[in-house]
Image (cartoon, rainbow, N blue to C red; front, side):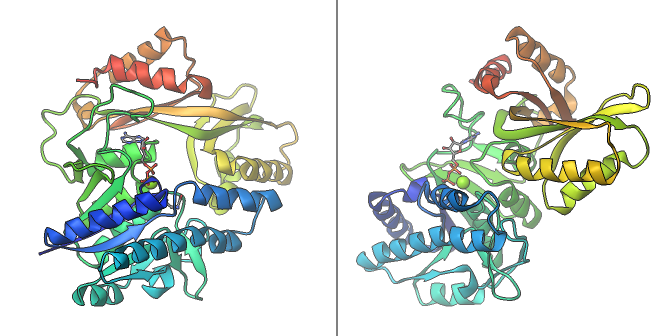
Amino acid sequence: MSLVVHKYGGTSLGSIERIEAVADRIVASRSEGNQIVVVVSAMSGETNRLTALAHHITDRPSPREMDVLLASGEQVSIALLVMALQKRGVDAQSFLGDQIPFKTDSGHERARIEYVEPKNLLDVVRRGAVPVVAGFQGVDDIGDITTIGRGGSDTSAVAVAHAIEAEECLIYTDVDGVYTADPRIVERATKMANVEFEEMLEMASLGAKVLHTRAVEFAHKHDVPMRVLSSFEDGEGTLVNSGADHMEKPMVSAVTHERDEAKLTVLRVDDVPGIAWKILGPIGEANITVDMIVQNTSVDGFTDFSFTVKRADFVRAKDLLERSLQENGFHESTIAGDDAIAKVTIVGVGMRSHAGVATKMFETLAHENINIMMISTSEIKISVVIDERYVELAVRSLHDAFVLDE
Ligand code: ADP
Ligand code: ASP
Ligand code: MG
């Protein structure tokens, strides 16, 4: 008998019919001899709906109350799925974050996982029942509800899989695996049978939202094999694990893109030591992730400084930036913002041993007349920031140029 985690995402639970279908899948998997702990997301669209409700009231809802609000989405799914299982004669029990408990720090809306207690879940498994866990949520030291960031229930699933020492963490979703590009944009994208953690990590963090970045990070760190599968049809899916041999890998394995980016530029800032620290310090302290950073060569002792943040953090980052320019007496500086940019990335462990990948990427974009605003590279990826309007064209032409449809 093997102990596995099944995670079902929003679209897999988008309606009562889908929830019933998930219950059937769990029943079938149990009859193949698996012991299953289920982790679920909110029904599709629900977390967005709740977020919109909050934003009708205020631009800056309190993070603690956002967590109370957003965690309700998963509470609905666990209850409905347990009812569907019980209707099929399966003993099942729902778990909210604090009933596990799934302990996190108090960083509301993006809390870090501290510890997942396996005992209560394993007790239920031992009595032959199915625990159904609310993903995305946890509880902090003082008993407050926390959430671990959008898309976080993949990470919840991996954390649960690690805690109960499951053999595999199966991520059931609306695609039948990990593709060479988002199949919604590139029709000819192909399914990958196996992806290495490292590659998947870059893909996820650079827009392949089929898996949550932190889920892959966590799985990599604790060596929890993951498998991405369709909840709609049977199949082998894509295995995500530590992989083996890099020798035969293609230069580029996948193209990813990310739309919800924004760029802030500080124009004419004094080019003196400590500048980056003064500009970015308050932004980091506010828990806003800064991604690409570019500082221009200085002219007359002044320089321009640009960086990107998530579009959702744009307004907050801009406010902080304005304040720190004032406080530091940079009266000549002005701020320019652009929240209609996107990032396109090519990823591949094979890049390590191939030259000329960047040239080919830039040439491809040039042929499409797409202007590159920023570039950043690592050993196994190259990212560019472009105007959001050209993102689909960029992804498709790069997918073609690196022959990923074969
Ligand atoms: P869930 O609700 O199950 O968590 P998500 O919407 O978070 O599902 O993730 C699945 C989606 O990820 C797919 O519908 C697909 O459009 C998108 N996606 C983006 N990039 C990729 C990729 N490289 N391979 C597969 N799916 C991808
Ligand atoms: N429901 C949460 C979200 O939409 C978590 C998840 O689905 O993974 O972000
Ligand atoms: Mg997801």
